[in-house]
Amino acid sequence: MLPATLDSWIARAAASVSLMIHDHTMLVTTAAAIALLYAASRVHQFFVPPRALRHLPRAPVAVYLRWMLEGGGFLALNDAIMRAVREDALRKGLIASMEDTPRVYLRWFVGVWIVAVSNPDDTKTVFLNHELYEKGRINIGYARQFFGYNVAGAQTPDWKRQRKVVNPAFRRGWATSFFGDPARHLIANWDALGVVDPSQWMQRLTLDALSSAAFGHTMDSIHHPDNPMVTTYNRIIHNIFQQGPLLNPFYKLTPGAAQLRRDMKAFNDQIFVMIEAKTAERDRRRALGSGSGKVEDEDRRDLLDLMIDAQEGTTFSKEDLRSNTVVFFLAGHETTATALSFALYLLGMHPDVQQRARDEVIQVMGDLPSKPTPADQVPYPTVEQDRQFTFLNCVIKEVMRLYPSAPQLPMRITMAPSILSDGTHVPAQTHITVDMWALHHAREYWGPSNDKFNPDRWAETVLPDGSVPMQPGARGYTWAPFAGGQRICLGQQFSLVEQRVVLAMMLLRYEWTAVGDEDALRGHPRTAPSGLLRPDGVRLRMVRRDLV
Image (cartoon, rainbow, N blue to C red):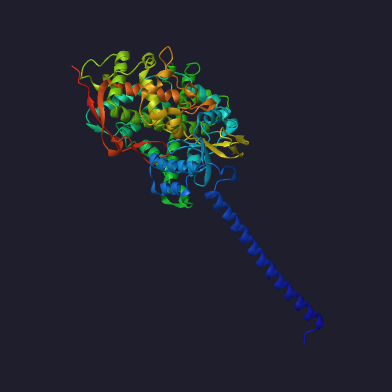
């Protein structure tokens, strides 16, 4: 028989073990409950907007998920979203009919609820109060890793540091030869073709113009579409902006993600090689006694060269140079290609407008001497002639109204509580965007012809000297494809000059009509799955003009 003291000790130990087991069970149960509550909270936030914003009309999350899984284009998604938003707004008494556009509504993107403004009052407020409506950081997929913290996406303190270097590179004239030379190469190809895909060819043309303006040498993708740097870049953009991986938490473990990382490294390595080569070339010129090392023709200097000069004596790093070069590569190439593709499409659908634009180009530049004019002798506008186009600018504005390259302003974040024009109280740290598509198509601001292509609607904005103002305030912030305020798109003038030069040359060389795709011929072209608006399936029949 055990001594009483030992027996008592064993009893106490058994009780302690029982209590420990009970406590452990309680701990595990409590931890599991907390984890479940947290998971439920996250799921709730994923599908249900914050309480302060639930009064705003919105489309069901299922609409977005279906699109992301199926990989449809923007226009198909937007039609479904806005139909559901209008139905919800009508139920809530916020609009009078399904043809009206709610001033403010909610969008959803991968679990993030975004306040979307689609009226000029709040658009102006968001643009002009950039410290209250701060640029949001892009932390989706591999976008941040590739684009970095550039001047377009940097938050205010870092933006102020970067713009001292980047702004001077953009605030100068652009030699029209940057765009005229690749357009001649394109014409040489199109002369041999009957029907063309404008989206594919404009991507190549703008890429060549952009690489020349950004790096000082062309990628020549018009002649060599399989150029390794071109194909690498195209794969990167396709993989970053496709929808499927955004819903796959294990995407980073897939072979596709591994290939994307290899592509980004290869592309970035090329950018760094260019930076080193240009820095060495500038130093060489200085050593030979060329003063600052700058080249003679300022309008022909490329962006990288200008930024390298401007960053001396600043905290602007090689990574800053890389990230700003890459984002301009995207913004200066993809967006302008989209604008030109839709311009060619709409002019092909409206031969009367095409002829009026051609008449103006001939009046400013003179006509081609004869039909056999070689492609490499097709004239492009001089800088002075480029400033004389009025109707062509109206055409460009109308194209960008109907088909803004970036239909949604990149997300911003409210840094403090704010109140919108409809009385909505927006909490701090809320994502907010300007819905450019809704703003540009709202019947409230454009009348019953809101969805019609009508360049003459811009005649009222033409100034006495014939120029057409391109800032959003010129029409009360109802048109803003380049955004506005201090954070307006730096590449606006680059894009506009390129559009005028290329369109003028096409108008001199060809007459064309839209053909083939039934959706496009009905006036509702399909768009490709992409972060930007890009036509899909549009075809044009290009015919050399019948000159003597």
